[in-house]
Length: 185
Ligand SMILES: [Zn+2]
Image 1: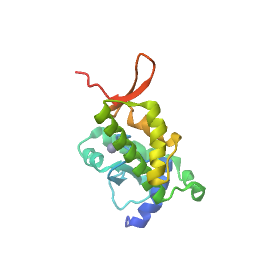
Image 2 (image 1 turned 135 degrees about the vertical axis):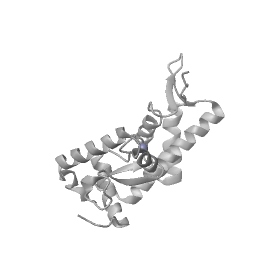
Image 3 (image 1 turned 120 degrees about the horizontal axis):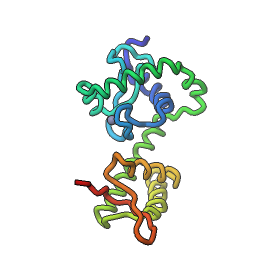
């Protein structure tokens, strides 16, 4: 058991946690970790730095856990699941390990998509899905030297999932548009 949770240990654990937990997402709300995130100690013991006891979460969700029985249960179940699973997800970690700069690029690309799409919707009211697929990979390549249609499709899926305020609709000509989610009263 490592007593201190050092920055270098966090950096080493980050790609492992991302791979184990299927993405750079929050343990509690399952949304992408685009802003501030923390290494959550599932059993609440900050000195228990076994990787099984760690998961990534939003700072805000970590605070919410204090008063949320639901979140506390998620943490308990996750710890149990991690302990049962063992450490086999760490094998061949060098082959697939994403380094921290790749993660930073992912965060930048995701934030750029979010900002650009939001701006288009503010200006035009809606943004054609096919234009997004064509324009965003190009703009990302120009800006970050990274990005592809596949990446853009993945981000669009996340950004228009039912927990977000964006959605994809079809008009009467079957053309797909990204627009603000209508709030039902
Ligand atoms: Zn969260």
